[in-house]
Image 1: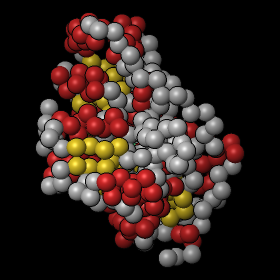
Image 2 (image 1 turned 135 degrees about the vertical axis):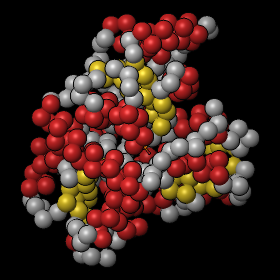
Image 3 (image 1 turned 60 degrees about the horizontal axis):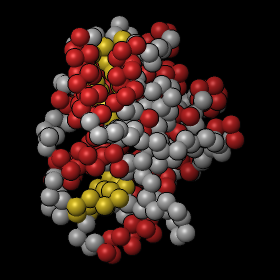
Length: 360
Ligand code: 13P
Ligand code: SF4
């Protein structure tokens, strides 16, 4: 391995994510779900709005998005769908970077989110000013950032990538002889570097959900279920990725459940994804990869606290009030759009699609 590629940048305390909220899923009384949905549906059509939801949001939101002509997908497809949609309002059920990406690609549209406080630990770990200084210190490198970043960080980047396209983009840039800065996920960066051999300087962020998966626990679960395939999102540590039968984005992992012959799967990603996996392959058994070590009270708490902030009550509230509109500075947005559009054009040329996902 190239010496430069092993350099890691210590993360100053200011970049550490110190506050992770508890997971507080929406709780609904009997009958409340149906009542909410019957008020939300007409408001969506009256306001020419579509719901664009991530696979980690609740089953209620995912079902509603699909029933009303919206979309449920990974972050690459959320960006593409929002861009292609005719609707005047996009309601993004996910985390803030997803809402910002929608606004950057569609500055003329109104973009609302059920909760603007839905952050992402990767985004929080990478403040734009510190990241800018880091880039300034390495002017010879092409700057590649994960979609899980602020508009300002995207504006500084040459390329944006999502998990479904990260390896392909890094390989493409390596073939052009480029050296890279990669931010903010150190685990995804390490994985991409190992797969492609690209020369990459890694920002030291991490996803608070995926970094908790434990190789030891997965090995033990696999001994109990030798027939199970192990599916891992690449935001997980290398020791976990090394146990995987499939490493991929949320869409790629869902597809694997449908396509692989295994009757069961150990899944190392947010458990919100089980809703779609069950829909795609109802007869298959899905097992959460363990996240707790010995003595931990939380055996598997594989759920993003920020994704959990989305719910039907908040969705109704933003439709009724217009609250929680996403705003991005137009100049920042225009710069960020260049690096996002570079990814979307590359995805189109590489033929990366999610078409064919079925099961609902
Ligand atoms: P995907 O692009 O694979 O959906 O990942 C987004 C994300 O935030 C995973 O934690
Ligand atoms: Fe961010 Fe991790 Fe939540 Fe995905 S699961 S939104 S990477 S904190």
